[in-house]
Length: 101
Image (tube, rainbow, N blue to C red; front, side):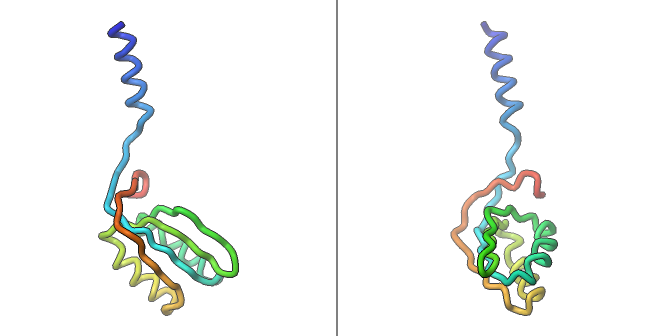
């Protein structure tokens, strides 16, 4: 019985995986289609996690951004777009950044 429980516990731990939780902020970006490709190419360098991306009249992209990189990302987005990207930040929370760091 002990062996069966040990084996089940080991399988559960292996399946659970590792999470890297960081303090983060949801950042909503609103931009025209012409900027989307440039922004998408830049984001991996900041280790962001994309929550959603809606393509309507404009592109609305929601990201989780680690608090320590948020100011640098906002500055880079402003410079890239000459201030044409509208940015809105949400509340601070913890998010999983495993695989992005």
